[in-house]
Image 1 (cartoon, helix red, strand yellow):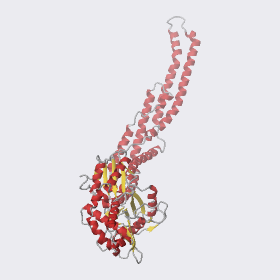
Image 2 (image 1 turned 90 degrees about the horizontal axis):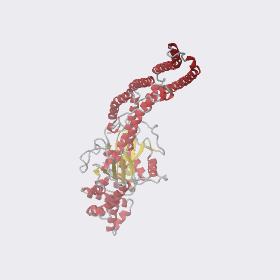
Image 3 (image 1 turned 180 degrees about the vertical axis):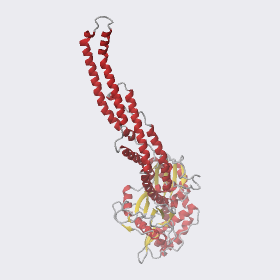
Image 4 (image 1 turned 90 degrees about the vertical axis):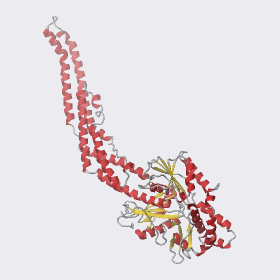
Length: 608
């Protein structure tokens, strides 16, 4: 049995208009994801009904609310968006609080009501985490109000659209497709570019479009669900028995209309599934007995599926809703449609989806009654799992072995760049400011390429191991690590600053050389008659003239060679500034962490 304690609980709470399901696991996934079964009634899909006992005013839930004699304030079908400005706690939230308290009484510590959420930082590590579903079509302010009402002291609560939760469950590792769906596991299929999740519930039909793992809720279906069929059937019952005073009295009693709707839903489910229609395993509240005797028998004979498929019926409305969703998707078919929710068990929903989206693969969740609750629990568990993965990743990136690896290749890369600059200086005919400041990289140094390859080998294996340890699909992460552009730039930083200093010096030498050459020319013009030989072919005169003409340029050339030699020695003596390697290593760690976390964020977007 899963229980609270050091491991903590992760709870998925699917409040349905017809039935409610609670699924749970531990923070470390021990025991898998299980569905809560009430001890008192054996319900796993708990009837979303609530009443009060006549004596101690204790709140009754599920079938107990229907069957307890003398129970008052019976309510059903109360799942609706709360008033954003309202202060009174909605009935739906009261139901959540009561059922959660019952669950935690067996598996943890019952919660206390509070007016504000506890921050994650302040939460105890064993504090239960509860993820509650909500219709995707609810407005953001309605969802915020719902979240505000749901906050409980001692329970960290998150909200998630129900259709997203269904997809999380369907695409879980090891998921299997239904008999009418693809033979392959939907979780193992290649990630489709566009997946449309259609969650057909009792009060709403949710549409979530996932494109490249980014979910978007489509704003429609918030007031369309399968209970429309129940309301139509209930109207037929009352019209057929409109003159029956006994039935009319029972319907007018507290909860009478709600019980009739429940009977209609049970009759609908039985006819669509082809099973024996049944109501409850134990006697119902005596005031509902006339409804059981008169209405139930008529409902068992009614052709509810035929009425659903009739022109202008529920099926036509569902088809129109799908076409509206297609328009919101810019008239582009999704690659895959995933049907879930209780309404997906009606064969006609799959047939209509195939008509509206002929190019898409249509898949049914094989167990739609529990898919949302399980997906909610899995979403919470995944969020905590990714938090642990982040912590382990930080520890990995701070390991000394990684620092030594980076330090070795960074030093070698700097030495390679120094050699390139020295070679350029040796080969330059004229060391000017422009020459000295030209880029010295000439492409990435082999040592930096080797660093990237070493990081991919060293970290790739370790990160894959972390993924396996924390249940993160490693094929969803890009393990081809790239270095930040600043690494090569930082390695040339000191060389660039050195080149700036040398360029100033070389500019002065060049200016002096030009000036000296000009002065030598002027001096020669002034004294050329002095060195002109008196007689043609006089050797001494020729030597004197040659020395006068070429002496200064030779001296300037010698100075240039000395300057180049000295500059090369200075380049070879350069070393990285103190702390520069540590700074580069920190940049590399941060860059790799950002690459991985960016991909993890994409995974989380599918959840929250």
